[in-house]
Every structure is written in structure tokens, then in C-alpha cells.
Image 1 (tube, rainbow, N blue to C red):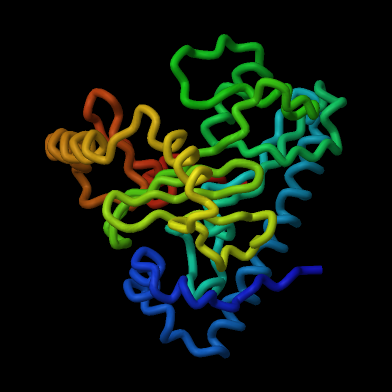
Image 2: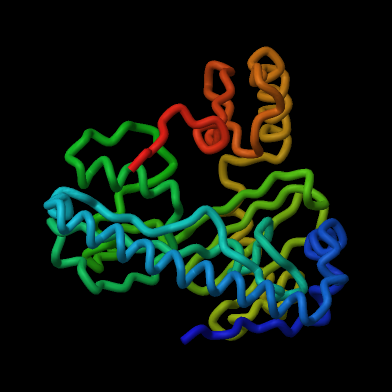
Length: 283
């Protein structure tokens, strides 16, 4: 049974520049109610279809004797606002967009089966985790950390925070967010910060930033979030990447939205295989 998300809008969120910019940019306030219902139904149908597809995949892996030697990770790169706070799609700091599913199944780690962990983690943690589970040396200086102990329910020594960044021309500007088990703090280079108590305000309607009672907490979270980070250094890196990318344009056109710049300046289009496949299944 699907649980319908909360679509009520908090009064303050109507006037938050970042949130308002998303609604204005995509004109989501103009979506009719009936179209909204259809879109939500379609989204839920996609989720149900994906569940069935994953079941088919697991059945085939087990049939072919590959399940014992396969680590399965179910996750995604972003959530779906589905109309909450007047927003759709992603690009937002709200839980519906920033919090994603993460299920890891490893037959050789049976103690973790059925274990539910609420500690905040990042997608950056998947690479070192898969290295560890595959008995591959974990490279140094990674942003992420091995999740194996967390999968076993052991939170001792875990950083207990997750950081999210978003830089795009689809918004009024960049954002940087820190999430711990209870609080979410969002900073902007120009706008006022946002602070949610997700324990007492799970739908993220009340901004506690700037309130006298939250002053000490806000300062602490801000210090954690901005440690070793500066808006200007990221802007300079973006400008540098754009300059280098001019020499490595796709020869067949603009490419797709999911292009990545490697450290040496080369551009890799992650979706080329989808639109210009070189391998075709004739089965």
C-alpha cells in the first residue's frame, strides 16, 4: 500500500527564495490538480514496475547460480518531490528529493540481513563498501567510508552525518546541506540558512534558523558543514572545468545531460550507450 506524501505547504516555504525559484523555474504552480493526480499515479506505477523487474532479476540470478557471488545494491541518485511543498522532481533540500533508498544485500554477510540502520550515510560510501566486500584494497583520500560495520548494526565510530551539495542553473544558486540523525541544516552563499528539526517537524515546515533558541545549534552545524569548504573555491573549480571541457567536446553534438569531466579534462558521456548503442541484444 502506497502512503500519499504530505502536500500542504508551510507559510514560510512559499517565500524561501531557493524553493520559490524552483517552483517558478518549472512553473509547477500552474500544474492542474487532475494532472497532479495523474503524475503521482504514474510515478507510483513506475515504482511498482521496478519492484517487479528487480524480482525478475533476482530470480534469474538465482536460477543461473550467480546469486551467491553477487552483491546487490538498491539505490538511486535522487528522490521525487511529487508535489510536496509545491515542487516536483529533484534539485531540492527537502527529504523527498534528497533522501534516497539504500538497500545492500550480501549473502556472505548474513548477520546484516533484515538489519535496519538509521544513521545518515552518503552515496560516496558505496564505492569503499563494495571494495571492502569484494576484498579489493580501498583507495586512500576518498570522501566515503566502508559501510560494513553499519550493515551489521554497529554505529560506533561512525561520522553520523551526511553532506549534500547542489550546483545548477535550474535554481537561484547553489546550496550545501548537512544531515544528522535529527537535524538538517542548509546553507547558501547569499540567502539565509535553513534549519529543520526532523524529529518534531518531519514534514519540514518550520525553519528554526535565526531563532534565539537555536543559535548555538545552528552555529555548531554551520561549522561542521563549512569545515574545509568555501563557495569561492568551488566556483573557481567549476570555471576551470568549463574551460578545460571546451577542448573535449563530443564530436557528434551536444551529448546528453549526464556528462562527466575526468581529472585530465576528458569528457565522458554516461548515456552514450543508451542513445548510440554499440551492443545490441538480439535475444
